Length: 547
Length: 57
Image (cartoon, helix red, strand yellow):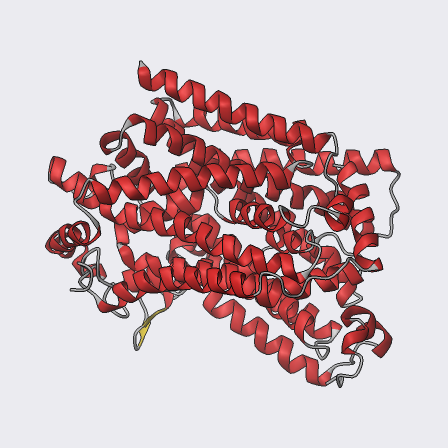
């Protein structure tokens, strides 16, 4: 009873705060122009928390935390990449240039930025189509992560939880969540910090401290080897066996696919443009690094430690105790072993994580339809028509995301970290498609329009084909490979040295293909006009040679 | 055994997570007041356009 009351009170409090901040945003008390001319002190922390809250979704916590419950603390390499690549490199090396170039070219969306940088409306159209076509998959994964947690926490049907949560997100987005997005995201980031810090502290505390907790987990290694030794598991505090199936899943899909994929995320790239100068980005690095450590570091550590808790209680490892459903490991762990208030704070944390990520995604999808698609065809919409187009865009992508979250569990229920998969697919596709020409376009004047278009298209096509026909985790459930070749992966169980082809993530193939093509073609196709390049890079780079 | 972790590479991941976060803290502190600049004409133009865009959402 107390638990229900507490949950009700903090949920209401959370919704009230979110609603109020959304309302403030709706009333336009802080506009982009306000940010530029005022608010020097507060903004970096808000920007960093907002970025972090958008970056870290329910899938990072529930899905990847659950994956750590299965694969162990080797998944912490993803946290290393999350911080070094997703925060440090992203802010210091990508963010500063994205901000400067975005402002010079007056670009407001990712497709608009690349279209203007390369003087190619087609590149803008292509980028917005990739976003509209595939981001609903990522959004559905976010909705699903939250719904799965509600299912366990409130003991309701998954479908009911999904519809309930989607309705709240939709309401939030419609009620002005997009306008007040920076402040609400930052508030949600604050809630996430509180929830995850408490969880980390308690998880270690109840097991007697950091080293004793790790030692108890290490002692369970024989259990892991007994069950998954053939796939390469060597215990939850060891790396999987080099070249084994588990090694490929952990390193290629979870760590590299997501760790690198985050660099070319359209919904994150636009965040850099909102700050006034590089100084704000310098300061944001501080907040962002600590935030991500406490988010994914906690999720992965607690996910792995859950094995000790489950084993001490029932003699079962986490995966089996959660009915072989990886996404249920974290929710079940909280329900069984943590005080009710931690679970309830975590519940609100997850709602915050899902809302901030989903609102950022809907913002990008809405503008992709409302601004980029029409701009590509040279249509100047009236203000009213433009608002309508944005809303239709949001509505269509919202329905698509909910439908996917409804349908996917039917196909993916066999124990694979589905939440982790959808995120990895989207991030992998983004990296292979956008990363070479986006980063190349920020750093070198040499990348040509043709190179950007062909490189991006090649990366996208190769990645998509790899997902459909080779990477078995996806190809086996997408069924196309089976229909065409009569087996779940084109390569079957083929190995070349330590490479198991069916386990190699699409990013490993798509990104090099895209990068090489972009690089090579840049040397043999027509360079962009000097004046255009100078407009992109500004006067301060005028003296640099164009090569 | 390192901090109770069986594998050196998992221990490295554990340490590097914290190290990377500390790198971010150090970078943020050292550069706290660096690269500040007043908004340029392009920055202000961008902000005005951005406000118009968010009106449409």
